[in-house]
Image (cartoon, rainbow, N blue to C red):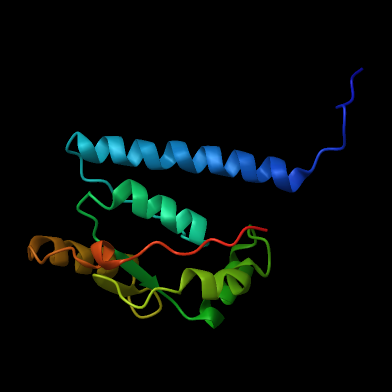
Length: 145
């Protein structure tokens, strides 16, 4: 009676929880934006399904699409130095994360310190340049496994 009626597929449970958490996360960001707050979202778009959800939620919002760039070698070095990451995650996600051809702005965290990156972003915002790249993006085909 204390055991589940069938064996638990932890990958399925994890996916259901991840989808729910990201849905609430996206909805909260959109709500804050709709009521007039400027919101900074630091996230990894690591699959086509998540990308499409982002596009659906934020296409009609003023979205400054920033690429935070770093070499694979440096990401691997940082992952190992931190000691709190699953080793190999940086390398496995690299091609998924760096799959966009264009951003409104790029900051390279190997060449710039955090303060310089923030100043570059703030300078772009203050320039009143148009945030246009996100509006040019198209939904991606999602394969069903």
